[in-house]
Every structure is written in structure tokens, then in C-alpha cells.
Image (tube, rainbow, N blue to C red; front, side, top):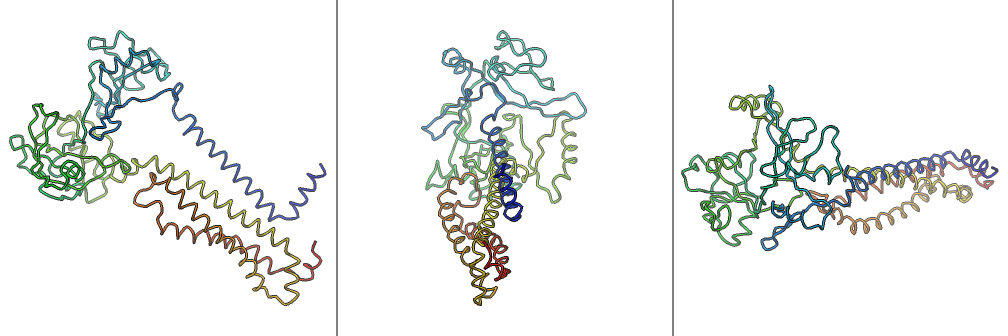
Length: 447
């Protein structure tokens, strides 16, 4: 108890030190609590499923054509996996979306084709009713549904097949490249002449041209859908366009083929509509919905987003990671500032007699200020130098989180170094200025 009373007495005697100590402890405890909360949700318990560490997703690769983890298992392969006895449970699923009509405003809703073990594997129990029975799986099984809110039918997955394509295929209209301002590097874009009776043509991206026809003129080269024996016609390359990010900014650019919409009628049931406006894009939504409703009143218009929103969503995970890093960087900076202030304040207190003697012998306030600042700014610069070396080595680990900036960007390193030095200067300035106001007579009697 005597030690505790003495501790409180000393804290009351030095309020500035007490403030720094309490602030440091509060920030450290708060940061630790926040870090644990994030780690618990994101790392320790990221999925609301039973035994998530025992779940894994099976994809297939074709290394001979340079494709990794792109292909889903086929129906027969799923059956063999289920019969192998290697796994406790095996399920098949496919994410799909369907139109929901019958109301004033048609909607597009998310759905899924799943096998009978899907809900048991995830440990999900129905709130009402039951899940899918084994007798309901197969081409002749009764069609049943499991739903949250919407009356959706989940179809049989017994005849599901594998998708095996090594390039990304897209069907676009003639104005697609102009609308998205994708530059044409060679040849021509689609035109009204590229109809169903015309010579089948395609446009490829730069990566496609360089990979399959290196050091050659890719215009006039031919490709076809499927294998060599397929009945699909040969398509001639009409043009080459610059690479563009299709899925997300962090995805590696893949070879891409663009087919003319007029030549692929009936092959694709779902299309995306890209609109470029001269006004706020959001202000045109009602007009676009009305125009589509005039053509087909049961066609829902969904996932309406601007390009900026699409980009923001594509990097949402990295934004979250960077936000966490920034939060802890700010906390670290505050702790560093409070630490610098506390150390210098304590050092000035310990040197009170020395400072008093210097001032008694004729040292001016400016001399004392320069003495204290000079000593600790030299230590700050050494710390910044060591920090730059460590940052140069560690920032390479953040390369996957960066877009348009290299991990060792010189401008960033310089600005951060200057900023940290200025912060340290401010932290040093307060106790240094206090040192200039030391009374020599009081300082000589200081213990």
C-alpha cells in the first residue's frame, strides 16, 4: 500500500509524464483489443460454417496450356469423388441467377444448383421444413427448393458438365470499344457489316495476340470455338485492342476474344449493358429501365453500378486491409510521438541541474533550445534512417496491395521520412522549450 501511495504521489507531481503514460497504455490496450477483434473475425472464425478448417474447394488445372485452378469438376467426376470414400462428405454446387417475375417490378435474384449433401456439409439446419432428400437428386427427381425469401427452384445437378476453355470469351456490340474507350491497336472494330451472314470475325486483346502469334501480324489469323473437330466455324481476327481489366484490377490480364453480337445471336442469354453519359450516370437509371421495360416488361434491370463503383468493389478486400494497416500506422505514430515526448521530457528533468549551470555560466535560452533539439533530432534522424532500411526490405510484402505504385516508391519514402521527422521535431519542441525557462537558482537546488 505504501508503494501504491508513493506511485500516485509521483504521478500527481509530474502531470505531463502521467498524461503520456496513461495515453500510451490506453492506446496500446485499445489497439490490442481492436486487433484481436479483427483477427478473430477475419482469421480465426472467417466462415459461419461447421468446422470451416476441414472444408476445401476442388478445381482443376491444365498446365500444358498454362491454366491453373480454372476448371470445375464434371458431373461424373463428382460422382467418383463421392464414391471414393476418401472424404467424409462431398457436394456439388453452381452459383446461378434467375429472373423473378410476377410482380410490378421484375428482379434478378441469386440462386444455386446444389446436390443433397450441400447443407449437411456446411452444417446448416433449416429453420422450417427440410433440405433436399437423396431421392430428389437426379434427372427424374422431384424438383424442390430451399430458400431464404424467394420462391426459387433448385434444379438437378446430375448432368452438370465441365467448362474447359483456356481464354476468356466475350460477346460485344459494335460500340463496345468506343463506349469503354478501349484503344484499337490494329485492324478494325466491329461494324454493321458483321452480321449473321457475314464472314465470322473476332477481335482479340494485346495479350492474346502476343501469346499465340508472337512476332507476327495477328490480323487474319483464325480461331474456332471448341476443339479442332468441332462444328463451330472459323473466326478471322479483325482487330487487336489494348488490354483492359475485366474482373478486377489485381487479376492478371488473360488472353481475351471478343465476338460480334450480331454473329452470336442465340448463343448467350445474358448480356451486360454499358452506357456512357454526358451527365451524372445515376440520373439516367430511370430512363434506361423504362426503355428496357418497353421491350420486355419481365426483364429485370439489376446490379446498376458506375465504373467507379465497380473499381471500388473489385478492390474492397485490399481497401479493408489497407484501412487496417493505416489505423495501426496512426496508432504507432501516436505511440511514437508520446514515447519521444516522454523520453525527452524525462531527460530534460534529469538534466535540470546541468541546464541551470549552463545558464548560470551565460548560456542563452536559444543555446539551451539548440542543445536539446540538436541532441534528440540526431537520434531521430538515425531512427528514420534505420526505419527506411527496414521499410525497403518489408514493403515488398505489400506489393499485392498496391496499384500504380511500386513497393519502393522513392517519392513515398521521401515524404514519409520528412513527415516523421517533423512529427518528432514537434514532440521534441515542447520539453525543449520548457528547458529554456529553467531558473538557474532553482535548478542548482534541484534533486
